[in-house]
View (cartoon, each protein chain N blue to C red):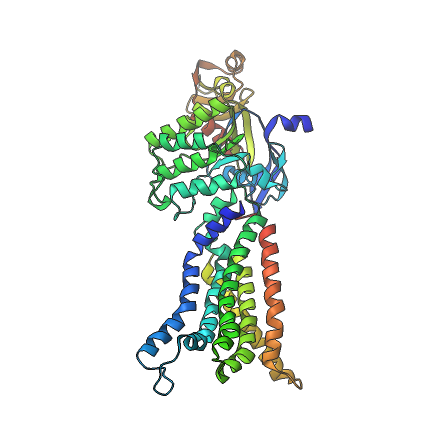
Length: 303
Length: 228
């Protein structure tokens, strides 16, 4: 376990959080190896932010365990935070502070701080050091938050929907900076976002969470290459039955049978042709957004 | 680390510090203005400045009750109200470091305002020879009650601040603490009428342990709490 833990940046075992009668995170088990960029996606209320807050030691867990860089987040959160950078969805940096004061304040709280990197990013983001936080635009506050998250050179970067509400230009700048940080320093990144094109671009591993549970976790490439949309047109009077193995979502209308199949192979088409009277079978590639939607719709339909 | 936290707490509570200083120097300044207009003369001679300082010290100390209860109430609830506590929560300082900084700042200000008041009464007054009968009465009568009330106001407001998201409510809770104690003691006196019962004595005697217990309970609760 110790050897396994040392190669894992983030690991959770049966992580559970309940708010009254509602279970927000339900026995979630995650394994994120060092150096991975993990895209954490799910619909609103799926438990992403709750999971992240528990990982950051900001929310008490009702069950299970969470470790970041081998440190138990519930017993030693202060030590863990020295090695982790976090950009939340909503920013509550002291509004009365000037940019330079926020930087000075945070600098004093970390064991290490890269002044050169901080100055570089400050310049890159065109942040006015003398401006008060309350006078910064939303995009500028997000940039400041990213600066604060990376200037102490953390081993793990946790981004919780950091680009929500940003215009495309600032989003692009933000993502470029994150990508540059990842490439330069081989950091582990946990990236949660509703903008799936961003996740697809950044993440090498995807985790889909729904109702507090992990529906799928695999390499982005593997998920996209291995998940296909199949359109089978059945002959008049024929009805669909048992779908092929790996079907995560299906819909039948008139004669058209649409299926989304994970772990697609030529055998899938062969199975359909052999088992059902089909006029035609077509196979389409899917983007991450469609894969995600079909996973969630399929889960809702089966619930 | 603690230096940065102290600086932050100083800035968050700057307006309270300003209020404390205003309440400290406001009464003597008012008295000085009245003195200049011949309103506080003894016979036809205006009072000496030191005399004015001593004369107004009880007012200053009594007014500081407001600062003290607000210092306790502001400790945690102010940052929870504007959600800056959430920013602080993902930075490295431990809960102990946070609580230590807040306690050092708040208690430091309390000690400063009380220290200034007590120095005026116990050091300046005898030095300049203006120990009036009124001052002696205040020193031996009301002063211990003010001190005990201050401890309870601060302790209960501090406790409220650790779990409330509004410093106004925490201030209200702080003020309600001593009033509730007075109410309970009055009821006790009314129903049981114990012989030799002295309300003031029991109020002062209970304010200290209750205020300190509330402070300790609040501190322990904050340290054990995970949420910002």
